Length: 483
Ligand code: BGP
Image 1 (cartoon, protein in one colour):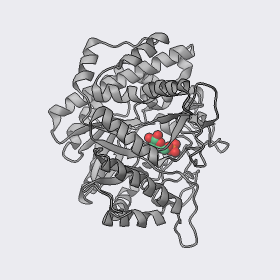
Image 2: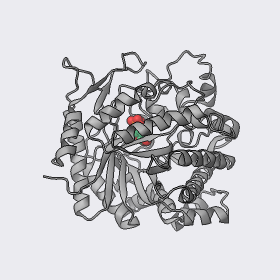
Image 3: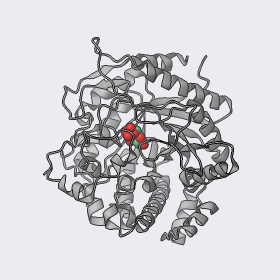
Image 4: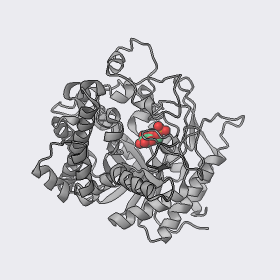
């Protein structure tokens, strides 16, 4: 069986704070991501790991008075090993590399007048290396690594002043890299603003008196990001025709737990506010009517100006990208839950789950692609999908990761089916081509890569890269287009 679409952009995705390391080199400031430690007692099935770290603990981490290990300060040392890694990506046959740029390398405090040239030069070298290797780049402007200075001095994204700081940062890098980078995503998983406000917005629960105030601030922060994204799209039109602007949404496809209309309705309402709302704003340029009822009933008051709504309306995305890891179920009554990294959902007895409780559902990807295509009629791109597993090198210095080959193959088959259904899907970047530090649990031992990296949860190891069995499978698949 062959993959149907020619010139499909196959590749891999990463983010700065999960790979780069070099957290304090060449003018870079500290980010919130680098201030959360590894927790040896973590519960892999709990999504609280990422949200349960207090403002005080973040503050203490600056001096590391706790003497804890902060994995995102070290990543996999891509900062120094990028040439070797890009060479491996090329060898695997990747046509596109999705990465992000660290705001804290370019404007360490956010409000400087001039960018940090050392930061600018680092990314230029990385992009040039990708170009030499014949790979396109998909660049995320902000991927969960908000500079601490912006959280501390501005209270993160709930403050409208941060919009201008971000636009200055985005304008600088668009000018610098317009000839090197074609695909741009202003925010990673923009909906995480409301799912994990500390991660998506850099706002602390402790700064708000009540849960209600915190919720309100997270929707304000989300709106500020919607507007900032639209502004960046507007600006990009004057900077270069080469720039293609998309969005990135953590796709949360859910099914009703059964055919009871009460549960079907509950699932519809969940899909509206957990999923379609975000796509509607960035792809249709409107706040959908159901969201207005949702805000009204919860007394959520967002400061939105007419001018902001106009910019959002006039600057929608050229294409849609989303992450797809799992699906879950929804019912009106209490139910057995399964896990995820940022949201939990109901169990589905027809699906298997990973050790972290993520339910694997390749057919759900075909369903999702069809739904999004029908609804938005915009080109689609799967910007994250993959499986995290605890792995060890065997005696032959490799990992026999047949489960990853199956996972990828099953999802690729469903993408192919969606293409046969007529869906316009033009690319896929797996999470991840190489092992990285986990976003939610900060583990190195949760491995997603085609390439094994010899570091453990405490960054012990020699950092060497080893090809897993899936590396050869992927390479062959790209060469032959055969499943
Ligand atoms: C997505 C994030 C990534 C990534 C992935 C896997 O939500 O965009 O940064 O890490 O999830 O999550 P985790 O690393 O927690 O397993």
